[in-house]
Image (cartoon, rainbow, N blue to C red):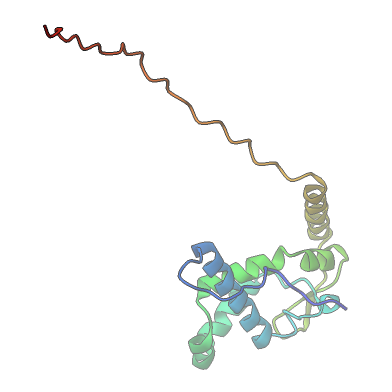
Length: 165
């Protein structure tokens, strides 16, 4: 029984943080909000994860639009859809799909069995991820030495003085 972690935990945000860090933080907030709102569909325990029903995006958008109290406390719709994409491509989710678990609705009720083609796709994603992890990380290219432009040759200037008598 392990806990799901999808994105690296964010530490304190300040003005020096990049836009990507801020987006990841906002996506983490959206994932936590979805897990609090629909704990059966987005559980913390990896043993309880099931593939979501096809069309879950529409169910989420309908739930947001149907209750005004939910919509006011919800993160931005774009963040929720980004979080949903991250959730459905996560290794625990792919393992659940590859294992052939039934698809579920937002409330946790069984919707339908997973198709063998979807099961094979999830297995292929897991294998590709494993292959990428086996490959050594690409080394950063060696920095090129700075180009030294030689100074043009100049003749020394001779000053000729007249000898004083």
